[in-house]
Every structure is written in C-alpha cells, then in structure tokens.
Image (cartoon, rainbow, N blue to C red; front, side, top):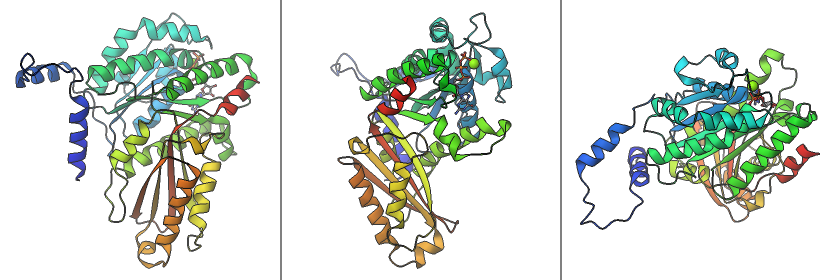
Length: 393
Ligand SMILES: Nc1nc2c(ncn2[C@@H]2O[C@H](COP(=O)(O)OP(=O)(O)OP(=O)(O)O)[C@@H](O)[C@H]2O)c(=O)[nH]1
Ligand SMILES: [Mg+2]
C-alpha cells in the first residue's frame, strides 16, 4: 500500500465519529464536516518528513530546551511553557512558540504544587495557544519535561490532560493513546538533593502507572545520568545541548526511517504507530556494527544495544508488547557481502527471543554510508521500577 493512502486512511479512520447513532436521525451532511473543520486553525506546518505528525509541548527549563531541540529538527508544531519569562527568553524559537504561565514568581522553585497550579490556572489559554500552533493536522502529542523541578514536574499531568482534551477536540480516535510523555530523570548528583529526588520519584511513579494503564502512550524515560556518561569531557556549554540532541535525533530517526520506502523490507508507518501507541514505556537505541562480515555481529549488537540502551536501563524486556528493529547499510555492502541477509535475520530472531511474546516488526534499508547501523525500538514495557526506587534511596 502506498504511503499517502496509508496515512490518509489512518487519519480518516481516527477522525470518524465514535458515537453510534442511527442513520435516519444523523445523516452525514458535507456541510457539517466543512463547518467542523473550519473551527480548528491550520496551525504551523512541521518541516520534517516522518510517519507520524508529532506535536510537542514542553514545560519548565528542560521541557523548553527539548522543544527547541525538536523544533530545530523540523518539528515546528512545538510550544514551550514556563513560569519564568527569563528561561523562555533564552530559547531561540519564535515568540509565538512560547507561553508564560505567570504565577507571580520567576519559576516554581522546585515546588511541584506551583507547577500544578500554573497548568490548571492557564488551562484554557494553553488550549487556545496550542490550537494556533498545532492546528488540526496532528497525529500524536508528546509532553516533555525534566523530573525533579517544580514547573515541569508539577504541570506535567495537567498538560497531558490538556493535550488529551486537544486530541479529542481535533477528532483523534483514541485521545489517551495519542498523548505521550518524554521525561528526563535527574543525574545522581542532582538527586542528592532530597527535594529533587522526591519530585522525580513522585512524577515518574505517577506517569509509570498512567502508561501501564494505557492512559498515556508512550512514556519515554531519558536517564540524564546514564546519557551524560556517554558524553564525557563536555564543556558546561555543550552539556545539555549535546544530551538533548542525542535524544532528539534518536527519536526522530524512527519517524523518518519508517516514512521511507525500502526495496528490501519496509518498516511501515502503521508498524511504527503500533509501537508508539502500545501504552507502557518505550525504549530506543542505536548501534553501529563494525565487523558486519561476522555472522553474529548484528545479533550481538542488538543484544548489547538493549542491555545498554541509551536512555534508561532496568527494563524487563521479556514483558514487551511490541518491538521493531531497523537495519541500515550502505548500498555497496547490501549488494556484495555474502551471508549478510542471514546475519540480519539472525539478529531479528534474537530480538524476538529477548522480547518474549512481543510482535516484532522489521525493516532493512540502504543509504550511501558504508556502515551498518542497527536501530531498535521496544514498546509496551513496564516501568523500570528498580531505577525509580533508586531515586528514593
Ligand atoms: N536532558 C535534559 N535535562 C535537563 C535539561 N535542563 C534541565 N534538565 C533536567 O531537568 C530537571 C528539572 O530541571 P528544570 O527543567 O530546570 O526544572 P523546572 O521544571 O524549570 O522547575 P523549576 O525551576 O523548579 O520551576 C533537572 O534536575 C535536570 O535533571 C536539559 O536541557 N536537558
Ligand atoms: Mg525552571
């Protein structure tokens, strides 16, 4: 099936009414549809080619910077919110993509109640602002923030509710599964402050429950402590931008790759969406396989990639609901290396073994780089409870 057909069909399905009324009292008039469509503004267009039209809502300093990262990757349906104008001023995104939840102080001072009040106080205005930016052509909304502070952590659940209200308003079929969260966990150093650790534990546990009950999808946890160790020797100036870029690019690559056709095996947009909307937690990883002539190199890379995923550890992979792996290799190697297909298949089989009963989607793509890369994504996972408990201790 062609890409355009899949996408428009998907959208048409999701926008159909969920109320079952008899045909005779509810005839479907063209005019009704036209006037309903007029109510939602056109919003801003995303400038990236991906399977899912994502929109981003970021709260607090971390959330705002993540929004900027996605904005820079072409996701222009993005809005940064904060309780302090100063942090918003530092974000280089156009003014209309920023919203001040003015609670009379510069920030929430790590008080989650203040963040919670801010989202509740500005509920209607936020809905109005995001309508102007997101418009009607949105498939999925992600709320991002850093666990540990007051503004982002306190407002996160309120913003998720607002995003779900918006998803309902634009006619997405399953508003709960159309809204996910991207949450960072504090570094061990930051979590040395009892208030930061308590805030992070509180909101992370709350979202873990919502995700497991399919009331949000997905929950993506970025462990700042872990990811910072992957980038030693950064300067202060480079620190957050590097971490944010790593996260943003990894997230973006799945959306982009699954939009592309493949002459080998395509990982369809529908497969990708089934992972994003599977509920629970999602993890993603990437590994470059150097000795790809070795039959077991790909399967080993997949294993290592999962044991040491970029974002967080301590997941029980055997309880995953759905998984996917995409192999990207250079055009030349695809045509010349004997046994590569077997090695790739073996890698996919290993992923199926690790993820137990999960449905495993596969993709094989080529590009101009003579390097073999393995991208893995797993969805519908229970939260990494050991890592969350560690915050409390
Ligand atoms: N990955 C990432 N994490 C960040 C970034 N900035 C802050 N964080 C993390 O987010 C946590 C919360 O910090 P902030 O986002 O500054 O807090 P806030 O939501 O603004 O809350 P208040 O300042 O208390 O109102 C920190 O402890 C960091 O671990 C960032 O740019 N990227
Ligand atoms: Mg702040």
